[in-house]
Image (cartoon, rainbow, N blue to C red; front, side, top):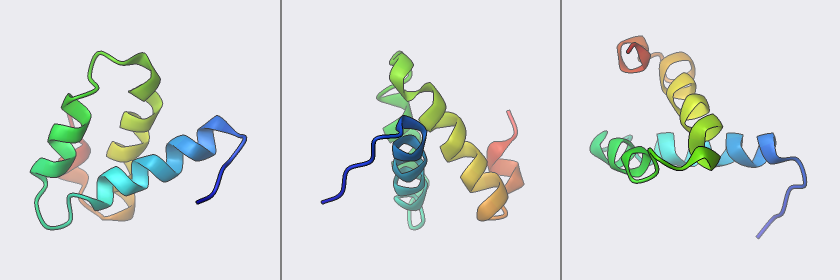
Length: 65
């Protein structure tokens, strides 16, 4: 287990984990993000996750909204 002092890096790594959880079933990502839709601490993670899906995975249609 690792720990990172910088919050944005933690959020980035968490966003990647959430995004990659949807490789077989995209509903995993949707439900993970919906579970925290009212949680302000997930705002940046949600943005990073959507950006990762759109840019890194090349699924621009998934990040339009």
